[in-house]
Length: 549
Image 1 (spheres, rainbow, N blue to C red):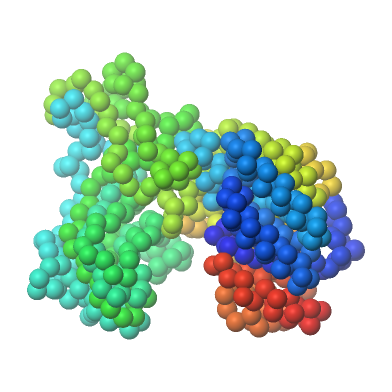
Image 2 (cartoon, rainbow, N blue to C red):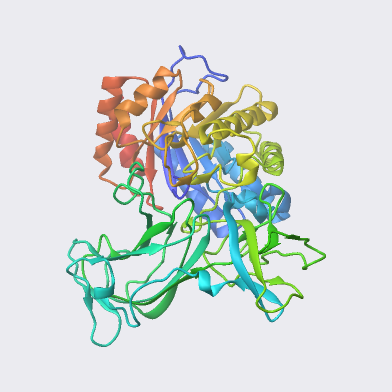
């Protein structure tokens, strides 16, 4: 949900509910993803606010990743912020700032990239060569097939996957059919792996993917089939490109074998080629260093080496800083362990590494005291800057949790860790803004949505996360597929609910939510939600909602 560019919500007044601050008169709220550092983007925001006011909107939920970094912002940023406050006052628009990026944590991680939730690697074999220890190539998984790829060397393939006589394998005009190649590979548990593949396309409509799946059949549905996916970063292949190397990084977790898929699940037209698949241990790429993510190096006999004495301190200089603070790369050349040790010496290295999801999402570890300190600082600075009556917590799509030692040493399930963080964040807001309204996205607190088992790379069960929200927290509900169950759940817990509908579908589909709300009850408002910056239906949505009222 954090990748939304615009949302709007109608909040209906219901004086019978017990809330810290009564909801204002019936409202339409606009959610806008802003960048207050750039003048012309503030011009765009002004146009939207004035347009929204004309259409009858009365508030704006305003998000800017730099709200988590106000202490680093230049005077020009605050001039633009004050400009927005003046526009809001002129138009009668209430500003509701967002804060607490738990899930999409770029703003927090810009302060310290080592706060990323780390996936553990245990006893990875390294070997010393030329004064540096690198992953032992002998430990790399064996991937069958030559170069170019020979489909007959893979365990299975769909009919559209054929060997190209010139180079690699080719998929042409899939027309919506599956077009995949699969091979099962032996791996070691709790290791980080790096897969590379050359990809070429010509007018290809669809999403080329490399999917690494656990082989165990007992896990509940997560993504593909009935098994857990171990990688989620997008390849970002262009519709037409010449041969280009793409990178995949994954942690094997507790698996000793995985299935590797190459192909497309949604292709329609054009051609796609694959070639030169390689897999190796990834080394120390995106190495996370902090007390809650320990790093150890031992000799093969178990003797521990001392950092700073037996080898210089190790850090990844590209961690969370490329192309800007808080941004992480899927892959870059990892740092080495420099050591004046004999060539051929075997070492065992245990460490933690960050992992990226989709287009660069990285999660901060909520169990680190510094994370909580940064959240407190954000609450104080954002309220000092805005002086708002209401704030919107950004807890959303938390895709990795309870993996590093900072979390594991608490001996709590994932849901309890999230509940504790949510409760802390609510308290931080009440300290700076007593009696103010608090909103939060629904998904991570909804047992019929993401608050359950086997959610992405979360270790354990997210059930119970909702215990961190008291009934005065307002839920922005976007569980379209299970809307009846979700509405019942939050209403039964005494929450006021805003419905997030639309999602770039025909605007009239909001009627599905209205029908559910009428049948189930518990909903007080509606939220127009678009995945892209599409404002075309802003006025029409307001008209439809007004007509339904």
